[in-house]
Image (cartoon, rainbow, N blue to C red; front, side):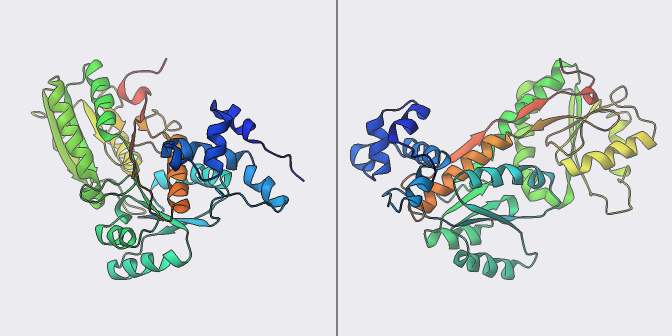
Length: 346
């Protein structure tokens, strides 16, 4: 039998009073005006410390015990490095609070996808919708029934819904300020054809950031197709921007899957990185430190994002999707400086 976890143990871990913890665990927090965020912290730590498990072993009923279940995550594609990177963190975060976790890809047929997603409510206690998988119609349908959902890397301007996103404005400022500090004044920004709608917000942020800095002589935008298997990056989509009169001295890539094909074609054309042109990415990618010239990029705070998502989902499940507060959380990325921009991390 596991060790009995007492209220004072949880209180000590959180730096809170035993009385406050007792009120939360006995479903009396709302009556005493305890903030929802504090309640979530208490319940999350109680679960992590085994409070509910110990009570279950003794056959005790805990008033605040959360509902068990499985959380589903719908993603646009499994080819996105972000999905590969964050999934283990989410798995660990949900496991720590006793919830299962499963990932599904978005069905390319819109009508079938809408039907499937709403049907999944029968199997999942809550759901995470990532990026373009969070279509307006699906979010409305799920929200209408007070179903527990969180949108990850997707903002909704017209609906009151929980969202956890990377702060793109902060990321745009970090990267543009770094490039100008290196004296790079002619910028080419490359985004993908297949992700135009998702990229629009980032492009808008970059336009605002570059305009605000006033340190660029020229900023150009172009769209490139992600090469299929066995094909090469279309050098023609950027060639004109690497010659006079444009002559960009830095290339900023919006989508990490474009970085390797672009890097390869620049090498084939004998364009040196960073001597002839700097190369940076607005997303992290697997293996970016392993190529010949490691790539400067922005890195999402994956662990922090996962913990925040897990706690919000759990709160929504516990409150049957009717939580009084809906969270719009923005988390700043980290700038990882490598030699592809002509600067070296200390």
